[in-house]
Length: 437
Image (tube, rainbow, N blue to C red; front, side, top):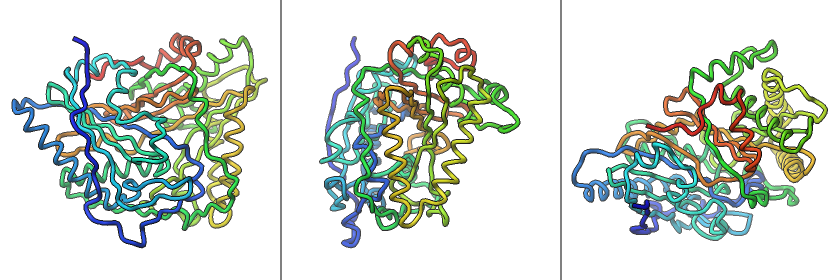
């Protein structure tokens, strides 16, 4: 029998109390304005129970999720608003959409050999839906399996916040739902009050390159293999590379090899762009609970005439790029300087992304955000994934369940992915789409 998902109901969830009048308008910061109008999905899978009262459990979970979501939106009030142009969010408690769905299979049938394309049916909305500019800024879909398991997917507009804000929202909501005794700190949405969009010429990041038909594959590096990569990548300048630096260097090496092989070039310029949270890098630093967008990207470069690719050299370039962005950008980007500094960075990034003479790989890391701690009162997730974001030359990194390994979701053209999957060095350290069970 074919797997079929059925939408049971749709409901608008509003904040549990009205947003105060002085918070009704959330003006975008210079960083918010540059973000693409796209949804960022996070999909969590929760195990089932032996409870025979399936309908009763579904009713209980739905009620718990909706009530706690309403309470959470009181603190994350821009999530329940609507975007007006590319200037501000009208925080008039319009609400978010909550979708209940059922699927006619067990959780094991989905995650034993996960088919990444099939995961998209659990998304409440397409990543590139135009709804993001006029409608809901957050959509939630709770899908119930026949075995009692639950798939919970959140899709949040990137205009509202970055990975740090998104993760804070999820953990706040989970703590509220489970009635955790942990003291949760309410977010602070400062937006344009701290980073005003002085330079009106700053472009919004384009996603036109996503119109191609790429292939996404999942590569998993367990803790044991990660330790070996870090040893291999170590050098005098970077004696102890982080797991993100080591995995990034290895993937970068493999994708460069694939690109050069496919194009028939022995050399071709390449840039590795890795997102980084800049909140603690300002002088003075932003509050820990600063919400909105304040992530940047640092660039590591490989020139076209450099033929030899060594892991330890690529790790050094990544570390060097991180240091440069912290020193020359983050520590100076405050006050009136932030618009020109960030604007210049966005313009140069878009120039690289649109160039036919340089390969740019955009890497986003969701590691260390403790997303596997998201217990809504029915246990911790057994797996989380980020389906639907099929942008060519993009890499998304997440923690494995134990917090010690790394999952890499790599998206390339079909030809380059075929070469990537056969790379012996990569296969020495990574498992290709292993079972979650």
